[in-house]
Length: 96
Image 1: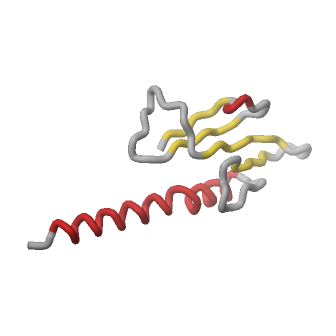
Image 2: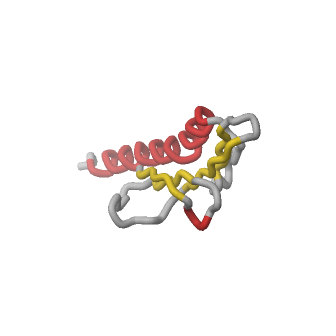
């Protein structure tokens, strides 16, 4: 997983970019799976919006709930998929 801070995709507000996957190039890869826009409310609170979250809750979120949404939308799914692939690999290769 790669996380970086900047103004992605020409955004006028600061963004946090995330890249998930097995083949992440930490030095050269500018692609991303998720972008989080960061804004300050009039009462000086931080709000975060998931820009690419097609199936989950885009927000606005506070920092704790954005971590939970990223876990549900990206990391948990990847973890379950990896466990299933490992199970199937072991099952296939344990046959005689």
